[in-house]
Image (cartoon, rainbow over the protein chains, first blue to last red):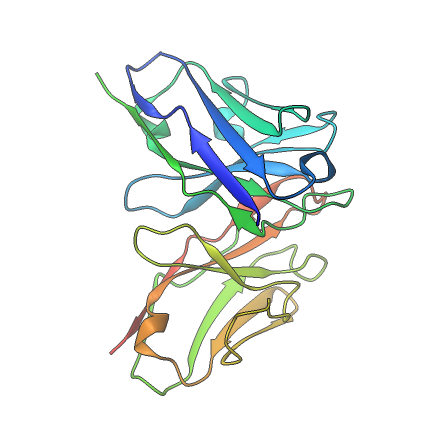
Length: 121
Length: 108
């Protein structure tokens, strides 16, 4: 059974940093694109970042470029999101999602339950 | 930047057909996908590659795409289909993902 379990969310002050983790199980992690998607309270889904199977390609939404870094450790079956210079508008539930096995991200077929990040003083 | 546009809300009575549209300039070349999200839950894929239905999704859910418009159709909508629905696709490079703004479906 495919499982994605996020952790690392919490309350952080504006300008602060946070690192999210996603533990994957039930599939060959190193064969899939992985992504982070967020959802601000009462708002819609927003794609944040994609990372290729071997970590050689990373793509970000414009609003987080230069502040967030997606990474992965295939030996540990784990996905990460390092978030720096956090702003109030980054407050959201952050979901880890599995992409496809091919050369492009495709779509997301499995999602975690999300971890809440709150940026507030 | 690339945009996918959905109506904010759609309302139907139980048993009626609900149609939710999604427009985007890259849709003639890129597949559309549809996610259902119920309150407090993670999204669930209900249509992939424009018109394919994942296993476990009821047959009343169908999808189509023509030109710059993709459509999710729920034939004979049920009360349990009340949810937010999001279309999803990628930009022309295939590297940047994008969700539509979401459509709140009310069935009552």
